[in-house]
Amino acid sequence: MSEERGKRRRSLSIRRSTLIIVIADLIIGALLLYAMYRTGQQFGIVQNATEEYAEYRTLTEELKEGIDQLSDIARAFSVRSDPGRVILYYNEISVTRRRDHAYERLTAEIEDPRVLKHLESVMKLSEAMREAEAYSMRLAIAAREESLSQYPEALQRIEIREEDRGLSREEMLRKARNQVFGPNYENLYGQMKTRISLSVDHLLESLQETQLSGTIKVNHLMRNERVLVGMFLLMLGLAVAFIIWLVIRPLKRNISLIEREEMLEEEGASELAFLARTYNTMLAQVRKSRSQLTYEASHDGLTGLYNRNAYEDFIAAAQGKRVALLILDVDHFKQFNDVYGHDIGDKVLRRLSEVLQHIFRGGDRICRIGGDEFAVLMENIGKEQGDILRDRISRAAEEMRKPTDDIPSATLSVGAAFPESADENRTLFKCADTALYSVKHLGGDGFCIYENDQEEN
Image (cartoon, rainbow, N blue to C red; front, side):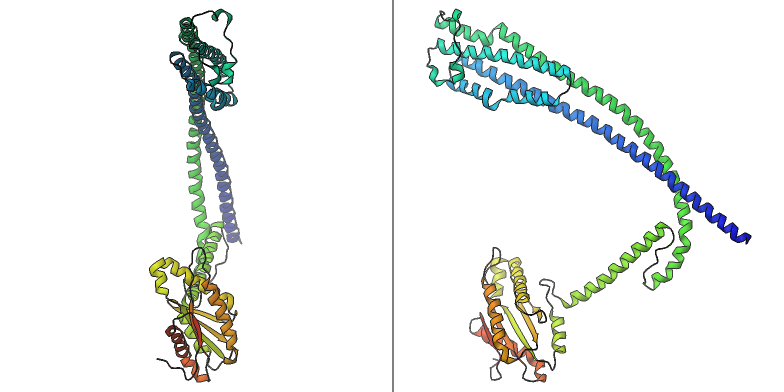
């Protein structure tokens, strides 16, 4: 009695210790996963901030390039008249809108009020520059006394100011150039560039703050992860020691079952049950593989039909029964492989197998006995039902003549034979093959039933 109680106490102690270790591992694992999750979050924040800065930097460059493009066009027009430049200028303003698109995306994605304020100033300065550019082009057109009809309507609506109407052509042209090359314009352009630089600086400042904060948090989290990993490994080592002790005896009991290739009992510790399930799964797969090998021994790998071995078994089992044997092949099959390739030849054979399975009865034995040669063994049928065979073969031949997207038309040669007595089952293949040869001799694409007086040569 005392020995039994001692064993029980030892057993309970092991279970209690294992339970404590498992719970501790779960807690440590949960904390470790949470720390890793938080670390991933911080890395993601830093990465997103970096990507956003690169995107915003690109958009500010596009904003500046859009403004510069308008400025370059206006300046070029003030130097040399080219109506195409004016059209390009207004097309950029109303259609392409690089500047406006960049500004809209920036204001939609940026939340920093300092950056938004600078961007708003950039657009106001850009509008002032655009007014100067448009008036410069209008003055240049007036100075050159060109017709306004060839220019966009928006430019035509600009009126020459009262103080500029009395200027000479040279004075108008000089003032037009001063509008886009003068100090006022340069001042606007400089302010615009300054505002863009300030917005980029504020973006960089925000990025650096985010990176610094994220780096501090990541370092802290990684220190915690290292501590948790050490604790986890220690508890895991203890758990492994207890588990090994608990599963040894159940494993010994299952050895005899393994030697007899029987299914194991899923008993003992969860790890032992897992091993038992794994073994049972493998044993089931082995049994399935054996079944698959049996299947492959009697079936053709390309078409899924019965193969030559199965055909021989069917013929042997058909002795003394009312049967009919059909031997058929694809006319000029070698040409399919030579002309279209072996892949197309395989598709022709698979299609023929599908047609035969669709047309013949479920109990009929359809076999691929070699190359493009097929055999169909039909039971409970006599020579008086030859018209039924002829009808089915006609339907099969008709289906094979229809080309598809990737399979060309094909014709069939078919020979059939009925045994006159039970002993003739042994020569049934020879008779059907003789009938097939007769069809081939006449050019193929036909059907012939063997008769006793039919020559074999």
